[in-house]
Image (cartoon, rainbow, N blue to C red; front, side):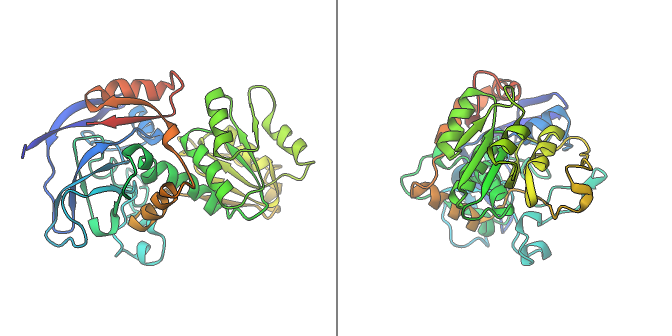
Length: 358
């Protein structure tokens, strides 16, 4: 076996380049997987821009699909050669957070002067998936077998995008018959729309300007798509609900404008479910927040991970309850990762998600 591999490496803000690194050595509880497909996330773009701090020299990426190359000596229940995914969030299963049922926050601590993002390790605190090989920590808690008959691209959204989008609907406690608004129909917003539909929302408003994403949002379950470039989405949603507002508003972009709009369309007692990764402080308008007296709930979600979460998501895919393959609009080899970043970061050519194949 070779000792070196290609990897997408964060050099400094504005530079992620293809380089070479040693293939990782694994410990007793780890697994080494050979990446067959991965992708680029909006969070990777935050890293590229210097808006989220990671160590220089870090291999980026947190959405792996691959084949088990090697297993640690203590790993049971898997064999080399099996096709697997691992969630973007890799809980140990043994931490206080995991044992308290908050799997996503396993490993949370202070780094760079602020709160590190929970159990998100790939491409954050350890090397990530945009490489030929990936070390998966705590393999028995995190590896999930891909069901027979599913392609890499069918399960590529499960490690992060699908889990996060569904998590927004789950954290918002969407109920049968609810009215839901989803602000932004990027990959996560599209999955939030699909999650709200599966949880029983009767009416879903999707706020989006890009025509291709508008069309996909309807496929994912939106009843009505509101073009924010044509109308004020807050006024339009309040008009369409006869002034009542929505039960749940899901913010899936990470800007002050969309956060505030989501708050303004809530009914009294409604829930704002925030999925966006913010790069500056948020402000809560006094009137929209009813001076703190509106019984509003604001909840945040970090992508749920772990093998059981991945199994459930892949079962939804396998049984035809959700199809995220149309989200893959562009394909690149790992050798062209820098071109893929340029396309994805600048949102050209109708890109939604890219598939990267070593």
